[in-house]
Image 1 (cartoon, helix red, strand yellow):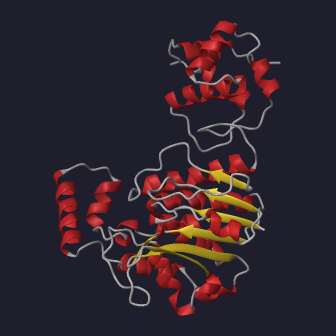
Image 2 (cartoon, rainbow, N blue to C red):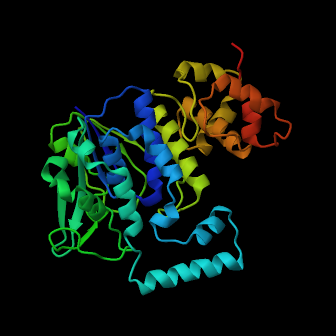
Length: 350
């Protein structure tokens, strides 16, 4: 069986929406999904067979409203309008949150009510689990859908997402609950202990405790190499970039493609050795030292990516290495830097 573990991490969870689309395109069947906090919400949507809709759910919902911020504040934030108006709006939001002893849960409740079909979740052939923490004894609660009463499933989803920024409410059995990240931000062990022989963990670098799992277990980690923004980053552009990043990062892993921050079609070590055939040994050694690697392939990819970032080339594509090098060589604003000089010596015609 193949399982999917989804970390918590606020609006960084948009990364997981793009990642799941890559799983669908690669025809990898997920038998069970477990998540913490926003990972639990994403996981529930996947488990009720609505995973294809995740990117649109993230793009269409008003994340500011979910987290209790005014439309005026979110609009100014999205426009990066660092004005007195933004400051005043933010201060008013802050005072409102303090007065109410935290962010009201209404926005999160509405999201869960709108997107979670309990019957579809229960009847789905994809298993689902989550983790939360009971506050009174700080006990971790691990539950699969079969363990949750039907009328409590939405409450448990809410409990798994209860960061301290939210106003505390008694949710289940007259108890308060905390975000599952306070005990296990990425519940890989839930799946391993249930007998899953292959687990994918999608990290989003949220704040929480990461539990160790068997180092010999068949666990594949997918995680961003670039910044996903803050856990409460409400900027729509950032959310869309995170979705795209998740998609391409996951394709890179699932299809065994090359690259670190960018994605390249897979090439052998010999291909990269031929690329460097006319590079003086001293220059190649300097490149390797600069990127802290002894591997020619890794050093070459990192050097190409370094120039791509400097030239602000789009991250969201699958690149052909030879074509990319030729394109970079033709750029008129190619600065006199030792990495640029190295790039010019790469032999792309062989």
